[in-house]
Every structure is written in structure tokens, then in C-alpha cells.
Figure 1 (cartoon, helix red, strand yellow):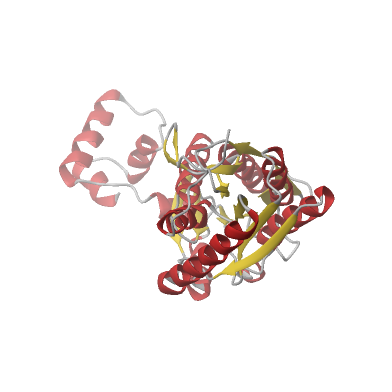
Figure 2 (tube, rainbow, N blue to C red; figure 1 turned 120 degrees about the vertical axis):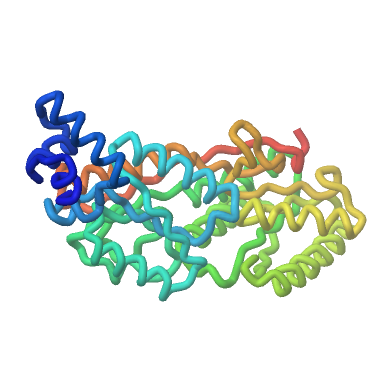
Length: 329
């Protein structure tokens, strides 16, 4: 800024007034503009935010963008943050705990406005309570607001949809590595509804898709068991804990000689979209991604502006069944 002032033959205060939208004489404004262009000056907004103890940057920590759900959520989070005057710093953790902690440290050092996190670890226990934060899906600390889908209701809905289609034997495919509340709730809702309806069910766990070899081997094993059950009892309904797992299973079952949905009907969870207006095609329990993003950014903005109460709030967003090509209409 000093170089601009020197080149334009004005004071640093005049340059500052111009940059901050304050009124300066027209001829002086032209001088400053020419000097800025000549020197390729770019204002350091981060440094300015630190100086005035105000920031408009929000760190968004999430495991990956390599899924339709996370990609769509990132889109809506950024849109709503932009509408509220914030800039998003996307921080992909790849589910690495140390990486997540480094993002929290960075957020502290840079004095960002706040944090939005999707973490399956105990990341929130490392976040100081004075930093505005909203969790999506998981917060075991009780210190921060939480926005989550009705996972339990989603599991119940899947069982009801299979019952509507006359299926008497159902399967739930979960994942053993994710011992956290959303997955537990999906399985519990499914089991409770099966018991209420008097429907037989089996439970299978598969490893994380982050370990492709073990995951694929497990899907092959589960598919073989489903094929054997089909030979004995006829059509089966399978509820998978994620759309990604549902898609892999569909491919394997068809490779094993059965037809989807004639022999095996499948419902996933997420209801992700490949593009705006274009979904994955499978039947799924659809999370309301846009509503999750809106509620999350509203809560964070309220914390940052000091308009929120001291009560830590939990918000559950309803889910819905989305008909696709893996269930019989």
C-alpha cells in the first residue's frame, strides 16, 4: 500500500480510503487506480481480517469429494456461505485424523470465522469451544450444534418399501469400520421395522470402500450368500448403507447370474446425484442435501454473529424414498 501511495503521490490513508470504498476526490481516485494497475497491487484480505479481528473465511473439513453426496453437499455449502458473505476453504481430510487436526490448527492460527466439519473421528474434541463450529452427521462432544439426516427413519422406510413389494426375506449391508451413530441408526431402524412387520432379515458387514481389494472381496462373498438364499427362498430385498455399496452389489449380483430388480431388489442410502437433475438411477433413501447445507450455514452464521443461544442444538432433517431402477415399481 505504501508503494501505491508513493507512486500516486498521495498518503497511505488516501489509498486505504479508496480501497475501503470511502469517498476521495475524482482526480485522486484516478491517480490511485493507475498506480494500482501499474504496480499490480492486490489487497491481502486475510491480513486485513487479522488486523481488524474479523474474518470472512470458513473452513469446511470433509473426508472426500469422490462421492455424489459429498460433491453435492460441497456445492450447496459454498453457495449458502457465499450468499452470507463468507468464503469457503475446502479441506479434504481423506479420513486421516492427523490431517483433520492440522486443519483445526490452521483455522485457529488464521483466526477464521468458523468451521464446518464432517468427521468420523473425535475431531471436535480438539476444537476450542470459542471457535464457531457446526458438525454434520456426528458430534460426540455435545459442545457444538449438529445437523444430521433422519438415519433411523431412513432404515425403517427401506424395510417398509420392501414390504410394500411383497418381499419376505431382507438383507442389510453395513460396514464394520464405521462404528458411529448414523450407521448404527440406519441399521437399527431397518431391524426394528423388520421385527414390527415380522420379516426375516440377515445382516452383513463389509469393509470400507477405501480399501478396494478387501471391499470387493467382501461384496463377492455377500453376493454369493444372497444368491444361495435366493435359490432357497426366492426374491430378496437388500438395503445397503450407502449408494456406492448398493451400486457395487448390483454389479456383482448381476455378474453372479441374478437379475435386478426381478430377483434381487436393492435400496441404497444418500440418493446422490451425478449432475444437477440427474441421479444415480438406483432406488435410495434420499438425504435432503440442500436443506442440510442451508441449516448448517444458518447455524454457523448465527454463532459467528453472536445471535445463537447457549443451548447446543440438534437438528434432524427428514429423508425420503426415491424410486429408481433397482426396485420394482
